[in-house]
Image 1 (cartoon, rainbow, N blue to C red):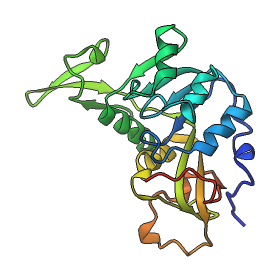
Image 2: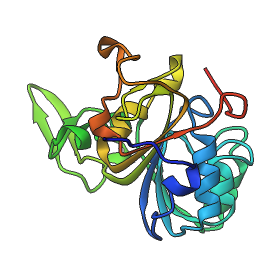
Image 3: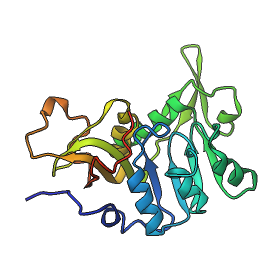
Image 4: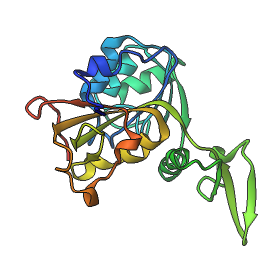
Length: 228
């Protein structure tokens, strides 16, 4: 019997090694897998490369991971916000590397990894410092920059419902980067609010098919930090 259910977040992340590249879902706090991040913090892996839309909010979740000096490099679109003081301090003191990627390119680079695309040309960033050192090409009178896929060892994502095969559905905007990150990582770990029996999720409504998910952890709705 195939079952990807794992007893706890700690068990799901027990094998994360130092130096791993980890994608973390979420748009700010919306859809951020807070309990998985907390478990990663407790697990102790360090020298990590994190791929996320931003660089943490406040002092919890991803920001706490940064604050514990466990992240060597972050790849993101929005590293600085009003409450991203932990990243800001680390970056100004030279304690963390940053690869800044326009949001559309970030999403497409992740999607390309899951789709098996070797590289693609994007007009975004042409003529700016973000294109320095990259191949450019003029196509039909428009200038493009060559971008490469973003792969990861692990993807930590949050979904609303899942079954033991790993099929997932999401809650509104909490969906954001979760589906493409699951497809781009070697091991996708999903925390879900509810585990249902096979067949209870209509195949027509499955957003992330179980083939892209390796581990599912149920986080009780009463304790999860649910965000729309």
